Length: 163
Image 1 (cartoon, rainbow, N blue to C red):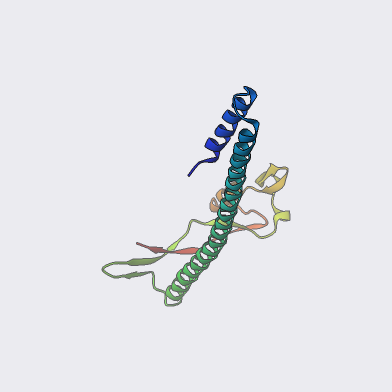
Image 2 (cartoon, rainbow, N blue to C red):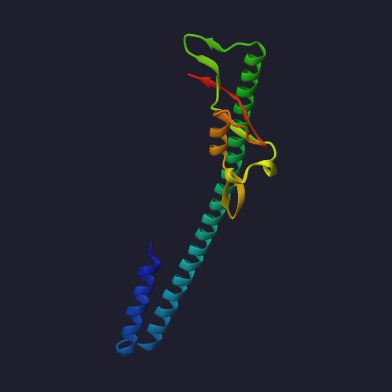
């Protein structure tokens, strides 16, 4: 099968020969018309293939969206299952469950700062960032040192650790 590149090259050669007056004008015109018809057919084929490729891209996009939705659903299910397991262990006051294959523990997370009322925070605990916002690292250090910081408290959360 002749490629578009070869067809256009043949057309250029014929034009060059036509400029030299070595070919019969009728033969040249017929041959040029034939090659141009092939080029048109080839271009139509290119367009059809491009349309098929665009349809494939659309199908892939649709599949990606579907897979992303499935991924999100599975991630949410996993998070709910882990939270349920942690809540159940905490309700039974179990810190650890161990089998030959799995170790499940309820562990304390590092303490974090929960800003209860940002407007009550001392100005020196705020970081300039176009607007003031709490410097949670500084607030945490102060609270852990036993200092009182109006508008903030230390909170202790837990996580489920599986090994």
